[in-house]
Length: 564
Image (tube, rainbow, N blue to C red):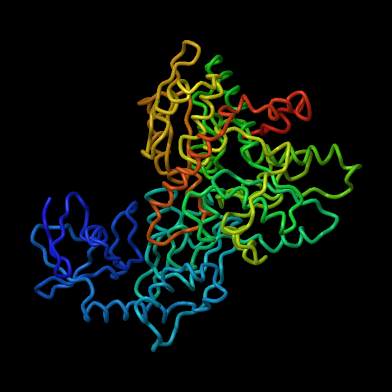
């Protein structure tokens, strides 16, 4: 604890890890490109420099606060320094801002305007590089890269994949893949977290908007949409709604205005996933084979395990993800009713996740030779489509989802938060709707945003050991401990994106309030759950009725993968 003077005002600090945090806590927004609190300190962009009372200029992100420090954050010298950095970055930057995906929310664009950079005096002599559009999840444009290194550190430190890195030196330096391979030829898992931290348009979501508009216009096509739980608490941010607001009804109404024929809830598919995954857990506990059971809802995690730890492939649940279960169900219904309708049914998923774009292309997610889900639109893409249609999501009157697949449990909604899948499975196995049992599960250790959470619950007289992994980089630690025999679990949930799907690679990014936004989205899902009359997936009457209806004798074909 100590005191420092910032711009002639005395400010107290405690355990802040750097001067930058102290300054921001004092209400001063110091500009940065390369600083994220969850990543290591890089200090490359030099935008956060401050000046002390002796005239020394230093980066505030890499300096520890000391008692008695006297600093200034906005001297004329610092203003000139920051403007020069911005001008030099823009000089080597592709400046087609009006057609760039993050136009209006670009950090470089925002700081250029804020710092008063009105002209660029230098020529851009950098050779234009072709876009890498080979990944179904994201697009890389090196012409817009400012070498901040945020994507590199995210990929290495948080996700543990390590696909991106710096290559060459000086003016030829660039961020690239190993041996400059196309992204599709690397072990990239498509999580899109590199896009979340990118301050420019160097990494953006792969767009599927135009093909979906074409399908909506085609009178011979029935376009069915499903909306993932994490989307409803994030899409409103693009329209000025309060962070964490449940905008599901607004979104359903907007999509009908746009021309979607039926709008359903992926939560329904999540209820089916809970039922099937709980059954599989019980079977494996009884047989003792292929334990622990790993969740299979997150496609980036599944690919990560296959690529880096293939010895654990057999431990991944055979259950399809909620998206795939729901898609297979809709397509099966369409096949049964083809003569009545006559139109071709297309399933479009609205997801918080870029990796879902790759999941739909995997061969095990085709049923009877037909793709279960045809297109995935991320939250940002559906927000863009709504704006194209001239609809104000905040002002539109909310509408209910289509039935019968619009009914779901509160347990399915919390799939979007880390620990939510585990909590939902435990609720199903407990088979109770009583508040006391719900609270016991809630407080057993499944909630929270710790890197690795552990819990032990008693199910039918047996202690079941659980691990919940928050962030893909932490999965490596758990897998290596399992292989070494240092830990033993029966059930392991892995979410690639920290905080869960609410922080997916396709979600809106609000500059400067990222952590606050993630927590607000989680809170929105938990509020939805608390107000839900159906707490457990096993109490969803529509889901249960399907086992005597469309799913009868087809559970394995529609709800499970032939191979994982």
